[in-house]
Image (cartoon, rainbow, N blue to C red; front, side, top):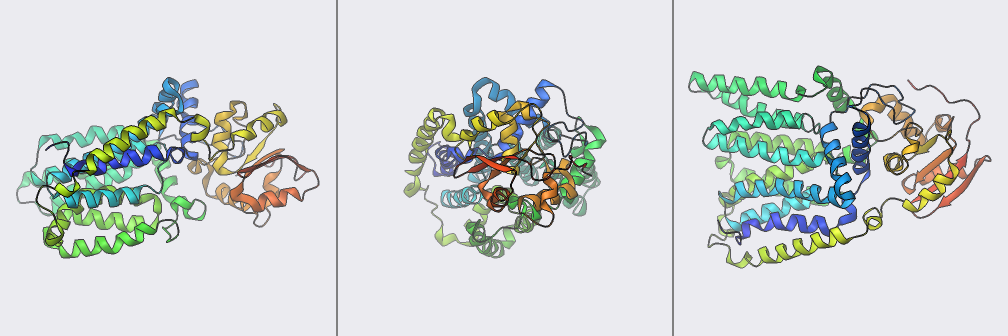
Amino acid sequence: MSWTSPRWAPALAWPALLCWGGHKLVGQDTYLTLLAGRQIARFELPQIDTLTYWTDKTPWIDQQWGAQLAFYAVHGVGGLHAVLLVHVLLLTGALAIITSFAARRASPFSVLLAGLLAIGLASANTSARAQSFSQLAFALVIVLLARDIEKPSPRTHLVWPILILWANLHGGVLLGAIVVGLRGLLQLVGWREPRHALRGLLFGVCAAAAPFASVYGPRVFFYYRDLLTFPGREIITEWAAPSLSREPLFFVFLPVLGLVLWRARRSLTPFAGVLLVLLTVTSATSSRNIVWLALASAMWLPSLIDVAFPSLVDRGGGAPYKALVPIFGALTLVGLVHLVTTKTSTLESDFPNEALGAIERETSDRSTVIASDTLADWLMWKEPRLEGRVAFDVRFEVLGTERARRMRRLLFVKDDWASSCDGADVFVISNRHMELATELTKRPKIKTIYKDDAVTVFTGSVASSSRPSYP
């Protein structure tokens, strides 16, 4: 297959889009990843939390330690630019693997259409974080399993080292285990020979064990438990169900997906059909899952589009679309140059680096800080001396349900919010929490030391009692 084939256009369009939106690659989870990586490099794998005082000495099972340490090491070599380049490479690699599989089974038009739809779906959240590794692992696993369905091969067992590594990179390994377990279950149900049943059983048992192949051993169960039971939809936008205002393309995509699946249902394998339905349901309940649906759709939709709408498919080699490959290729090359030459301050433009001077001047070795959840890890990354003196951050698996709800009451000024401020004398409040900033300005012992369009920094006390203990 020629590199000029339009089948490769999505894999070239994706890095171009990522590179030209450089500041969108840096988010709150980027700083959490780097901060945790620094903790591991300086000390050891965390067992208890020492970063925030609400959760001081609380058990911390850092399941994502491998990805965090890797990104921190990359940062040590080439700074934030290197981190973002590796992130772009991981995301591009995932889509390229998917596109390569689809390109050998479908027309150029269908591969291009499904790939561009996947890019649109996945572009809602593109920040560098531990999940970057998860996307590549997911792509490798589903391609190996899809090829195994077409022709069983010993190379399918490569899923096991991938899952073991994944279990030390990101919690998305649970999805990987479900996908492998689904392959085993379908093989067990539809077996024709005893060896098929044994193979299906092997896949099921090993898939169930794979998420526990962590350096934390069986204790990682508590991480997965907290991750799955945490009421994230109440607190985190990304964990909430998609909305028409935030993810309009998702609501356009759903009927298209349904129509294609219905019209090509006879060509759909049970594995692909069940997985696509499962991912659609999980995406409809939480927008953070849309990326998995996007990757799976880019893989299976092209061949299904060929069957469902043969009159729309250009089977003549894709001549009208060949120009897209050099165009997207050129945009990617220029985008990479643009990314590596962009100033770090521009990449971090969503974070108020200008406020750091005021924070440094007004904080002493005894200061304790309440910061908006979206700024806490950025603040500790930029000001290491504040580690252990910030109230909370976005590690909600450590924070727990009750503390997370207490944090929400504070940030959104609900009920007895002021009691959560006891002991704090510096407040770094994002413009997302303007109601809290307004309330703080009304307090007689509070003064504003910095304010811009992104953040307001206060000093003083809200309540005079000593710092409370948090359950």
